[in-house]
Length: 292
Image 1 (cartoon, rainbow, N blue to C red):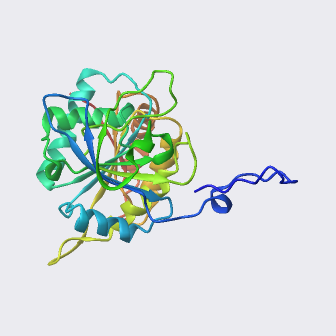
Image 2 (cartoon, rainbow, N blue to C red):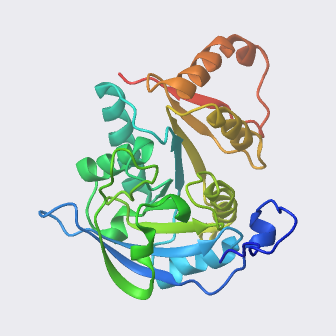
Image 3 (cartoon, helix red, strand yellow):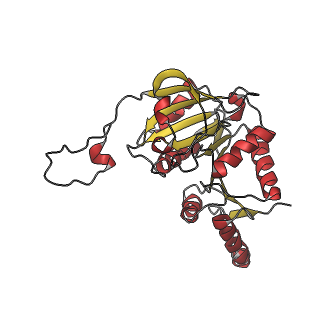
């Protein structure tokens, strides 16, 4: 809910999330019924959440209400949000590797959940190598509420909402990808602005990392970052992952373009220096993956 100054306001006040939004009980949660395919039945659980929602509450929702299986691995996929071409060999290596790792370990996959860019490639990987069962897919889109096309159609408590993931080519909004199984729709009061979901997503990843993979095993859930293409912000994001405690390993797909190729190039150019200096146990290098 946004509180805008009235017409009698004398001073111009700069709008901010902190001063001009007020949290209230969520008014949008339930199940999305994607209408983009006649040959499959694609449903996904969703909830609209505040940008400052506690990670503990989100994980409790995912495990208890959505009944997701506790993860043994978390794959967080980052990259380009706009559509970009991906060479066939890179696409095949990415798709098969991602789904094989997810299915063999019972992993969760985090993406932006939109129907463009790297999230679209994740959806295509699920379709090609995965399964349509929501419990087995566990592909979670963490998406800004304010950029979703016709997000007003999703308002309702514990509802089944038909959703058509089609938009005008000239529109600045995005559609949700129908191959994802769950959506956390992050709302900070803004419209048409990307990025508000990243802080909450990273906070949730850290909390999941602290969970034990089994009650009898004293080991947290491993988190692995996967990078495909991407803009300049990906470089600082990778630095955050490898510098965190404990560090998060990053797999970069060489040949996918832009930041991924830059990171792969730097990784290879500094290989001699890394070989000369032994790595400490707390250091996790960034790995680049070149398709066969």
